[in-house]
Image (cartoon, rainbow, N blue to C red; front, side, top):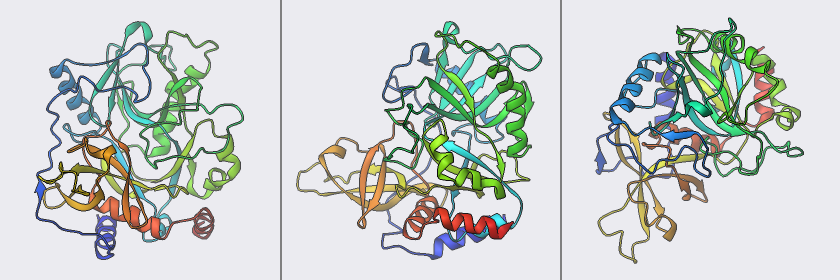
Length: 394
Protein backbone atom coordinates (compact mmCIF):
# COMPACT_ATOMS: atom_id res chain seq x y z
CA UNK A 1 0.00 0.00 0.00
CA UNK A 2 2.84 2.39 0.86
CA UNK A 3 4.44 1.81 -2.56
CA UNK A 4 1.11 2.41 -4.29
CA UNK A 5 0.58 5.71 -2.46
CA UNK A 6 4.12 6.91 -3.24
CA UNK A 7 3.74 5.91 -6.85
CA UNK A 8 0.35 7.63 -7.19
CA UNK A 9 1.70 10.87 -5.74
CA UNK A 10 4.66 10.80 -8.09
CA UNK A 11 2.29 10.42 -11.01
CA UNK A 12 -0.14 13.10 -9.93
CA UNK A 13 2.32 15.86 -9.13
CA UNK A 14 4.24 15.63 -12.41
CA UNK A 15 2.29 17.53 -15.08
CA UNK A 16 2.19 17.46 -18.85
CA UNK A 17 0.92 19.99 -21.30
CA UNK A 18 -2.42 18.27 -21.57
CA UNK A 19 -5.69 18.97 -19.75
CA UNK A 20 -6.30 17.07 -16.53
CA UNK A 21 -9.92 17.72 -15.53
CA UNK A 22 -13.06 18.38 -17.46
CA UNK A 23 -16.69 18.64 -16.45
CA UNK A 24 -17.94 15.94 -18.79
CA UNK A 25 -17.77 12.43 -17.33
CA UNK A 26 -19.63 9.15 -17.29
CA UNK A 27 -19.83 6.57 -14.53
CA UNK A 28 -17.45 3.70 -15.08
CA UNK A 29 -19.20 0.34 -15.21
CA UNK A 30 -17.58 -3.00 -15.70
CA UNK A 31 -20.94 -4.73 -16.15
CA UNK A 32 -21.09 -6.96 -19.23
CA UNK A 33 -24.45 -6.12 -20.79
CA UNK A 34 -24.55 -7.87 -24.15
CA UNK A 35 -22.71 -10.22 -26.45
CA UNK A 36 -21.52 -8.61 -29.65
CA UNK A 37 -22.38 -11.16 -32.35
CA UNK A 38 -19.58 -9.69 -34.48
CA UNK A 39 -16.91 -10.29 -31.82
CA UNK A 40 -13.91 -12.07 -33.34
CA UNK A 41 -11.55 -14.54 -31.73
CA UNK A 42 -8.62 -13.02 -33.61
CA UNK A 43 -8.95 -9.77 -35.49
CA UNK A 44 -7.29 -10.73 -38.75
CA UNK A 45 -8.13 -14.37 -39.32
CA UNK A 46 -10.68 -17.12 -38.87
CA UNK A 47 -9.60 -20.07 -36.73
CA UNK A 48 -11.35 -23.36 -37.40
CA UNK A 49 -12.87 -24.97 -34.33
CA UNK A 50 -13.15 -21.85 -32.14
CA UNK A 51 -16.56 -20.18 -31.89
CA UNK A 52 -18.14 -17.30 -29.99
CA UNK A 53 -20.26 -18.44 -27.03
CA UNK A 54 -23.68 -16.81 -27.43
CA UNK A 55 -25.51 -18.21 -24.38
CA UNK A 56 -25.57 -15.06 -22.20
CA UNK A 57 -26.38 -16.90 -18.97
CA UNK A 58 -23.47 -19.31 -19.48
CA UNK A 59 -21.15 -16.42 -20.37
CA UNK A 60 -22.03 -14.65 -17.12
CA UNK A 61 -21.58 -17.88 -15.14
CA UNK A 62 -18.09 -18.20 -16.59
CA UNK A 63 -17.30 -14.54 -15.82
CA UNK A 64 -18.24 -15.11 -12.18
CA UNK A 65 -16.33 -18.39 -11.97
CA UNK A 66 -13.13 -16.99 -13.48
CA UNK A 67 -13.36 -13.85 -11.35
CA UNK A 68 -13.70 -15.96 -8.20
CA UNK A 69 -10.82 -18.23 -9.22
CA UNK A 70 -8.61 -15.14 -9.71
CA UNK A 71 -9.89 -13.56 -6.46
CA UNK A 72 -10.78 -10.54 -8.52
CA UNK A 73 -13.79 -8.87 -10.14
CA UNK A 74 -16.60 -10.89 -11.64
CA UNK A 75 -17.67 -8.06 -13.94
CA UNK A 76 -14.28 -7.13 -15.37
CA UNK A 77 -11.50 -9.09 -17.10
CA UNK A 78 -9.86 -10.66 -13.98
CA UNK A 79 -6.16 -10.33 -14.70
CA UNK A 80 -2.93 -8.87 -13.34
CA UNK A 81 -1.79 -5.61 -14.95
CA UNK A 82 1.79 -4.31 -14.46
CA UNK A 83 2.75 -0.64 -14.59
CA UNK A 84 5.43 0.77 -16.87
CA UNK A 85 8.96 0.78 -15.44
CA UNK A 86 10.05 4.39 -15.09
CA UNK A 87 12.73 6.46 -13.40
CA UNK A 88 10.32 7.03 -10.50
CA UNK A 89 9.84 3.34 -9.71
CA UNK A 90 13.12 1.81 -10.93
CA UNK A 91 14.54 1.80 -7.38
CA UNK A 92 11.72 -0.47 -6.25
CA UNK A 93 13.66 -3.31 -7.91
CA UNK A 94 16.26 -2.86 -5.16
CA UNK A 95 13.73 -2.94 -2.32
CA UNK A 96 13.13 -6.70 -2.43
CA UNK A 97 13.95 -9.74 -4.59
CA UNK A 98 12.29 -9.78 -8.01
CA UNK A 99 11.78 -12.38 -10.71
CA UNK A 100 11.45 -11.54 -14.40
CA UNK A 101 9.42 -13.09 -17.23
CA UNK A 102 9.73 -12.28 -20.96
CA UNK A 103 6.51 -11.66 -22.85
CA UNK A 104 5.60 -11.81 -26.51
CA UNK A 105 3.26 -9.77 -28.67
CA UNK A 106 -0.13 -11.39 -29.02
CA UNK A 107 -3.83 -11.23 -28.22
CA UNK A 108 -4.39 -11.73 -24.49
CA UNK A 109 -6.77 -14.42 -23.25
CA UNK A 110 -7.54 -16.46 -20.17
CA UNK A 111 -7.68 -20.14 -21.12
CA UNK A 112 -10.08 -22.09 -18.89
CA UNK A 113 -10.42 -25.89 -18.85
CA UNK A 114 -13.54 -26.76 -16.88
CA UNK A 115 -14.14 -29.88 -14.78
CA UNK A 116 -15.37 -31.79 -17.85
CA UNK A 117 -12.34 -30.83 -19.96
CA UNK A 118 -14.17 -28.25 -22.09
CA UNK A 119 -11.92 -25.34 -23.10
CA UNK A 120 -13.18 -21.74 -22.95
CA UNK A 121 -11.24 -18.59 -23.85
CA UNK A 122 -12.04 -15.17 -22.37
CA UNK A 123 -10.65 -12.01 -23.98
CA UNK A 124 -10.24 -8.52 -22.52
CA UNK A 125 -13.70 -7.46 -23.70
CA UNK A 126 -15.07 -10.43 -21.70
CA UNK A 127 -16.34 -12.22 -24.77
CA UNK A 128 -15.91 -15.96 -24.39
CA UNK A 129 -15.07 -18.42 -27.14
CA UNK A 130 -15.48 -22.18 -26.98
CA UNK A 131 -13.10 -24.68 -28.55
CA UNK A 132 -15.09 -27.38 -30.35
CA UNK A 133 -14.58 -30.90 -29.03
CA UNK A 134 -13.14 -32.16 -32.31
CA UNK A 135 -10.59 -29.29 -32.34
CA UNK A 136 -9.71 -29.30 -28.65
CA UNK A 137 -6.08 -29.62 -27.58
CA UNK A 138 -5.12 -32.78 -25.71
CA UNK A 139 -3.92 -31.70 -22.27
CA UNK A 140 -2.56 -34.44 -20.02
CA UNK A 141 -1.07 -33.93 -16.56
CA UNK A 142 2.00 -35.59 -15.03
CA UNK A 143 -0.11 -38.47 -13.65
CA UNK A 144 -1.43 -39.29 -17.11
CA UNK A 145 -4.92 -37.97 -16.38
CA UNK A 146 -6.62 -35.26 -18.46
CA UNK A 147 -6.03 -31.74 -17.21
CA UNK A 148 -9.19 -30.08 -15.88
CA UNK A 149 -10.17 -27.15 -13.64
CA UNK A 150 -7.29 -25.01 -14.91
CA UNK A 151 -6.93 -21.29 -15.73
CA UNK A 152 -3.94 -20.03 -17.72
CA UNK A 153 -3.07 -16.42 -18.59
CA UNK A 154 -1.32 -15.82 -21.90
CA UNK A 155 -1.47 -14.61 -25.48
CA UNK A 156 -2.25 -16.11 -28.86
CA UNK A 157 0.67 -15.60 -31.18
CA UNK A 158 2.75 -17.36 -33.83
CA UNK A 159 6.38 -18.34 -34.08
CA UNK A 160 8.61 -16.04 -36.09
CA UNK A 161 9.53 -17.12 -39.59
CA UNK A 162 12.98 -18.60 -40.09
CA UNK A 163 15.49 -15.82 -40.57
CA UNK A 164 13.23 -13.23 -38.93
CA UNK A 165 14.91 -13.29 -35.54
CA UNK A 166 14.91 -9.61 -34.78
CA UNK A 167 11.89 -8.00 -33.21
CA UNK A 168 9.71 -6.63 -35.94
CA UNK A 169 8.55 -3.04 -35.99
CA UNK A 170 5.29 -2.76 -34.09
CA UNK A 171 2.62 -0.11 -34.11
CA UNK A 172 1.73 -0.84 -30.52
CA UNK A 173 3.32 -1.55 -27.18
CA UNK A 174 0.24 -3.56 -26.21
CA UNK A 175 -0.64 -7.15 -26.93
CA UNK A 176 -3.59 -6.51 -29.17
CA UNK A 177 -2.32 -8.47 -32.15
CA UNK A 178 0.72 -10.37 -33.28
CA UNK A 179 2.96 -9.73 -36.27
CA UNK A 180 1.08 -10.77 -39.40
CA UNK A 181 4.24 -12.05 -41.09
CA UNK A 182 4.80 -14.66 -38.37
CA UNK A 183 3.56 -17.72 -40.23
CA UNK A 184 4.18 -20.44 -37.66
CA UNK A 185 1.35 -22.40 -36.11
CA UNK A 186 -1.09 -20.49 -33.90
CA UNK A 187 0.09 -20.91 -30.30
CA UNK A 188 -1.27 -20.08 -26.88
CA UNK A 189 1.87 -18.83 -25.12
CA UNK A 190 1.48 -19.15 -21.34
CA UNK A 191 2.69 -16.06 -19.47
CA UNK A 192 1.16 -16.87 -16.08
CA UNK A 193 -1.32 -19.14 -14.30
CA UNK A 194 -4.19 -18.82 -11.84
CA UNK A 195 -5.21 -22.43 -11.28
CA UNK A 196 -4.05 -25.93 -12.25
CA UNK A 197 -5.96 -29.20 -11.83
CA UNK A 198 -8.17 -27.70 -9.16
CA UNK A 199 -5.27 -26.23 -7.17
CA UNK A 200 -5.38 -22.48 -6.49
CA UNK A 201 -2.09 -20.86 -7.56
CA UNK A 202 -2.88 -17.23 -6.74
CA UNK A 203 -1.02 -17.25 -3.41
CA UNK A 204 2.18 -18.59 -5.03
CA UNK A 205 4.84 -16.29 -6.46
CA UNK A 206 5.44 -16.12 -10.19
CA UNK A 207 8.30 -18.61 -10.21
CA UNK A 208 6.28 -21.19 -8.26
CA UNK A 209 3.27 -20.68 -10.52
CA UNK A 210 5.38 -21.20 -13.61
CA UNK A 211 7.06 -24.27 -12.08
CA UNK A 212 3.65 -25.87 -11.51
CA UNK A 213 2.68 -25.28 -15.14
CA UNK A 214 6.05 -26.59 -16.33
CA UNK A 215 5.67 -29.81 -14.33
CA UNK A 216 1.95 -30.42 -14.69
CA UNK A 217 1.26 -29.18 -18.22
CA UNK A 218 4.32 -28.53 -20.36
CA UNK A 219 6.47 -31.56 -19.51
CA UNK A 220 3.78 -33.89 -20.85
CA UNK A 221 2.96 -31.59 -23.76
CA UNK A 222 6.61 -31.44 -24.85
CA UNK A 223 6.83 -35.26 -24.93
CA UNK A 224 4.34 -35.37 -27.76
CA UNK A 225 5.96 -36.21 -31.07
CA UNK A 226 2.96 -35.36 -33.25
CA UNK A 227 0.63 -32.37 -33.02
CA UNK A 228 -2.72 -33.18 -34.55
CA UNK A 229 -3.77 -30.87 -37.36
CA UNK A 230 -7.26 -31.03 -35.86
CA UNK A 231 -6.15 -29.23 -32.73
CA UNK A 232 -7.06 -25.55 -32.98
CA UNK A 233 -3.73 -24.31 -31.62
CA UNK A 234 -0.40 -25.26 -30.12
CA UNK A 235 0.72 -24.63 -26.52
CA UNK A 236 3.98 -23.10 -25.30
CA UNK A 237 5.50 -21.56 -22.20
CA UNK A 238 7.92 -18.78 -21.26
CA UNK A 239 10.66 -19.05 -18.65
CA UNK A 240 11.31 -17.16 -15.44
CA UNK A 241 14.60 -15.94 -13.95
CA UNK A 242 15.77 -14.03 -10.91
CA UNK A 243 15.97 -10.32 -11.74
CA UNK A 244 19.82 -10.18 -11.45
CA UNK A 245 19.91 -12.85 -14.18
CA UNK A 246 17.73 -10.75 -16.47
CA UNK A 247 20.93 -9.85 -18.31
CA UNK A 248 20.28 -13.00 -20.34
CA UNK A 249 16.93 -11.59 -21.45
CA UNK A 250 18.44 -8.16 -22.11
CA UNK A 251 20.99 -9.40 -24.61
CA UNK A 252 20.23 -8.77 -28.26
CA UNK A 253 20.95 -12.44 -28.84
CA UNK A 254 18.00 -13.46 -26.66
CA UNK A 255 15.66 -11.21 -28.58
CA UNK A 256 16.91 -12.66 -31.85
CA UNK A 257 16.55 -16.25 -30.62
CA UNK A 258 13.18 -15.79 -28.90
CA UNK A 259 10.70 -17.88 -30.88
CA UNK A 260 8.08 -15.14 -30.87
CA UNK A 261 8.03 -11.39 -31.47
CA UNK A 262 9.50 -10.06 -28.23
CA UNK A 263 7.34 -7.46 -26.50
CA UNK A 264 8.66 -6.74 -22.98
CA UNK A 265 10.04 -7.98 -19.67
CA UNK A 266 7.81 -8.08 -16.58
CA UNK A 267 9.35 -7.89 -13.09
CA UNK A 268 7.42 -9.55 -10.21
CA UNK A 269 8.18 -9.23 -6.47
CA UNK A 270 9.41 -12.61 -5.21
CA UNK A 271 6.85 -12.69 -2.40
CA UNK A 272 3.78 -11.62 -4.37
CA UNK A 273 1.03 -13.90 -5.63
CA UNK A 274 -1.29 -13.39 -8.61
CA UNK A 275 -3.18 -10.17 -7.91
CA UNK A 276 -5.97 -8.88 -10.13
CA UNK A 277 -6.13 -5.25 -11.18
CA UNK A 278 -3.22 -2.81 -11.56
CA UNK A 279 -0.19 -3.88 -9.50
CA UNK A 280 2.02 -0.92 -8.66
CA UNK A 281 4.99 -3.08 -7.72
CA UNK A 282 4.92 -5.24 -10.87
CA UNK A 283 6.84 -3.50 -13.65
CA UNK A 284 6.84 -3.84 -17.41
CA UNK A 285 9.88 -2.75 -19.40
CA UNK A 286 10.19 -2.35 -23.14
CA UNK A 287 12.84 -0.59 -25.17
CA UNK A 288 10.27 0.29 -27.80
CA UNK A 289 9.40 3.96 -28.17
CA UNK A 290 5.97 3.00 -29.51
CA UNK A 291 4.12 3.54 -26.24
CA UNK A 292 0.42 3.63 -26.91
CA UNK A 293 -2.65 4.36 -24.79
CA UNK A 294 -6.29 3.35 -25.06
CA UNK A 295 -9.08 5.92 -24.87
CA UNK A 296 -12.80 6.09 -25.43
CA UNK A 297 -13.41 8.34 -28.42
CA UNK A 298 -16.17 10.85 -27.78
CA UNK A 299 -17.72 13.32 -30.21
CA UNK A 300 -19.36 16.54 -29.12
CA UNK A 301 -22.86 17.14 -30.38
CA UNK A 302 -21.36 19.17 -33.25
CA UNK A 303 -18.62 16.71 -34.22
CA UNK A 304 -20.60 15.21 -37.08
CA UNK A 305 -20.27 18.44 -39.00
CA UNK A 306 -17.40 18.67 -41.45
CA UNK A 307 -16.00 21.87 -39.97
CA UNK A 308 -15.34 20.24 -36.59
CA UNK A 309 -11.69 19.18 -36.46
CA UNK A 310 -11.32 17.76 -32.94
CA UNK A 311 -12.76 14.84 -31.00
CA UNK A 312 -12.44 14.03 -27.31
CA UNK A 313 -10.39 11.26 -25.70
CA UNK A 314 -11.74 9.94 -22.39
CA UNK A 315 -9.85 7.91 -19.77
CA UNK A 316 -10.76 6.22 -16.49
CA UNK A 317 -10.01 8.14 -13.30
CA UNK A 318 -11.42 9.23 -10.01
CA UNK A 319 -13.80 9.73 -8.33
CA UNK A 320 -15.43 6.30 -8.50
CA UNK A 321 -13.52 5.23 -11.58
CA UNK A 322 -15.55 7.45 -13.89
CA UNK A 323 -14.59 8.06 -17.50
CA UNK A 324 -13.81 11.71 -18.17
CA UNK A 325 -12.13 13.98 -20.68
CA UNK A 326 -8.36 13.62 -20.97
CA UNK A 327 -7.34 15.35 -24.20
CA UNK A 328 -8.35 15.85 -27.83
CA UNK A 329 -7.40 14.19 -31.11
CA UNK A 330 -7.63 15.51 -34.68
CA UNK A 331 -10.92 14.36 -36.15
CA UNK A 332 -9.86 12.51 -39.28
CA UNK A 333 -11.99 10.51 -41.68
CA UNK A 334 -10.63 7.21 -40.33
CA UNK A 335 -12.08 7.87 -36.86
CA UNK A 336 -15.23 9.77 -37.84
CA UNK A 337 -17.31 6.59 -37.57
CA UNK A 338 -15.85 5.44 -34.22
CA UNK A 339 -17.80 7.56 -31.72
CA UNK A 340 -17.91 5.90 -28.26
CA UNK A 341 -15.46 3.17 -29.34
CA UNK A 342 -12.15 2.26 -27.68
CA UNK A 343 -9.23 3.38 -29.80
CA UNK A 344 -5.48 3.03 -29.38
CA UNK A 345 -3.37 6.16 -29.87
CA UNK A 346 0.25 7.24 -29.85
CA UNK A 347 1.52 10.62 -28.61
CA UNK A 348 3.60 12.22 -31.38
CA UNK A 349 4.69 15.85 -31.74
CA UNK A 350 2.48 16.95 -28.83
CA UNK A 351 -0.70 15.44 -30.19
CA UNK A 352 -2.44 12.06 -30.20
CA UNK A 353 -2.38 10.00 -33.39
CA UNK A 354 -4.88 7.21 -34.10
CA UNK A 355 -3.33 3.72 -34.33
CA UNK A 356 -6.30 1.36 -34.47
CA UNK A 357 -9.67 0.47 -33.01
CA UNK A 358 -9.53 -1.90 -30.04
CA UNK A 359 -12.40 -4.36 -30.40
CA UNK A 360 -10.81 -6.53 -27.71
CA UNK A 361 -11.29 -3.90 -24.99
CA UNK A 362 -14.38 -2.53 -23.27
CA UNK A 363 -12.70 0.25 -21.30
CA UNK A 364 -10.00 2.90 -21.77
CA UNK A 365 -6.77 3.06 -19.78
CA UNK A 366 -6.62 4.74 -16.40
CA UNK A 367 -5.30 8.29 -16.13
CA UNK A 368 -2.33 7.31 -13.97
CA UNK A 369 -1.26 4.62 -16.45
CA UNK A 370 -1.39 7.14 -19.29
CA UNK A 371 0.61 9.74 -17.37
CA UNK A 372 3.24 7.13 -16.51
CA UNK A 373 3.64 6.12 -20.16
CA UNK A 374 4.00 9.75 -21.15
CA UNK A 375 6.72 10.23 -18.56
CA UNK A 376 8.58 7.16 -19.79
CA UNK A 377 8.25 8.42 -23.35
CA UNK A 378 9.82 11.71 -22.27
CA UNK A 379 12.59 10.06 -20.20
CA UNK A 380 12.81 6.34 -21.10
CA UNK A 381 14.60 3.55 -19.26
CA UNK A 382 17.11 2.42 -21.86
CA UNK A 383 18.52 -1.08 -22.04
CA UNK A 384 21.88 0.22 -20.78
CA UNK A 385 20.19 2.05 -17.88
CA UNK A 386 18.28 -1.07 -16.84
CA UNK A 387 21.40 -3.27 -17.04
CA UNK A 388 23.34 -0.77 -14.93
CA UNK A 389 20.54 -0.65 -12.36
CA UNK A 390 20.32 -4.44 -12.08
CA UNK A 391 24.09 -4.64 -11.63
CA UNK A 392 23.90 -2.00 -8.92
CA UNK A 393 21.04 -3.81 -7.14
CA UNK A 394 22.86 -7.17 -6.94
